[in-house]
Length: 166
Image 1: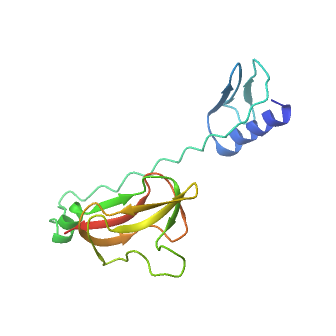
Image 2: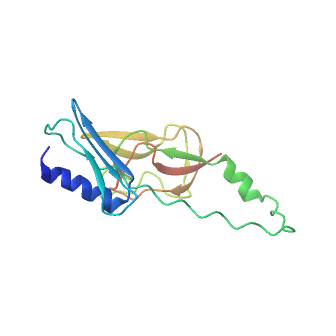
């Protein structure tokens, strides 16, 4: 690892505010730890070998606590829509790839919000590694929401549709 690469790691730690960054590969390792005083970093380099480095993401700040309800305020009774929403099922992407809502560009989408679907009906296609993977409905129901735009990359487990079972 070069001095320039180590300096870049130090900049990553300073810019992101992370407390510690450690990179290991084989017998080499680099650890950069933020000190209490600003501008001071601890750097430990036991062995110097060329390695590739990916910076750790910065931690997100904690969310503020929700406001406390008034002591005499009671939560509203659950509505029919809330009860129905409990049964809604979110269809998630089983793979990483590119989302397509139609079989070919310019043709109508497989499904739209408000459409009724049947089991095994194609909802969309996810292209992964040049393979077109059809995502099918597992049960009958109504499309309540579409969460992804056409031709957009999707991650594993990302929400694609919300379906209300029939």
